[in-house]
Length: 173
Image (cartoon, rainbow, N blue to C red; front, side, top):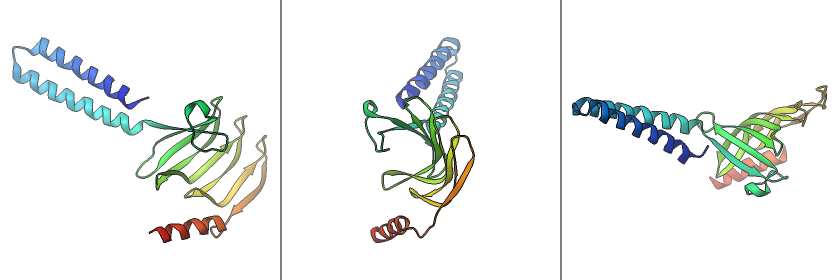
């Protein structure tokens, strides 16, 4: 849903309320004005509530890099999940859920940060575990296509990729 569509819908509704107020309460300007102000507060409050739940859609290619809609193989749909957090669901072109998890925005990039689940095309969980600023950390549970648990994989906090990212961030600060 585009934010301009939401605004147009709310403002059309508010204008309708205004027209009704004018028709019904035209002789009494004070009542009409109070009702219209109340309606405007209601409409804008609803608009902001809707805006906070809106989804941001990012189109991704087969290597999960940003691309335009025409060349997209995947679609990441994000919504606000609280201060500094985004809840995301990754879909393939057939609308199958490929991953679910929590993201953050850091230096203009959307990064995995928190608990994640990845799925096979049949809907079974493929793996689940945690990310920290875009890097897998801790123990990840893994499963085969039938849901049978495989050996877990450990991503220690001292893995080179994680340490390199933290050192770079400290150098940039």
